[in-house]
Image (cartoon, rainbow, N blue to C red):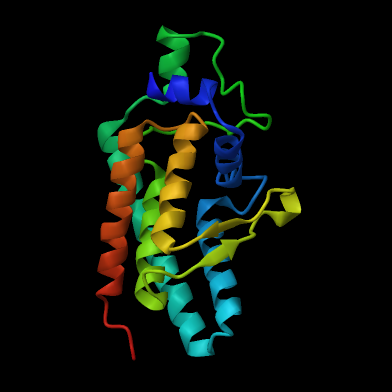
Length: 198
């Protein structure tokens, strides 16, 4: 019922969060591309050296790749039905994220865990290791789509917002979001433990 109620009662801010993080294939550069775009914005703002840029892209790439491997393995172990299927079958046959003007597309694969959450958690872990716990930045990845830039006080804050966007979009239940972020952070920490050249 949480997903059903949340989508029916979205605030304008929650709707913007859902749309900003939708990253639907064919419309944007997808969730992993969004993580790379964030890394690129950070590197440009830092006027980063080639060495720092190479390490940042390597860490983000490994973290996102491993996060999706772990996520997709878990999806097909648990094989949980998506909210739209459950809600239309048992609660409201007409429900399909009606409050969002540009509906977030429900992906055609199992619900648990959330891929957005997993890869965002992994990205946040590696970027935090590189740039610190309280790194303030603005993500303007979707300016060309007319979506307002979003500002964050830390990489964990961005990961948490990207994750909760999936509840607001009607795509995931809360456990898939929260545990997905946890899974991603663990994977990111493993990437950080690799023998990075200093």
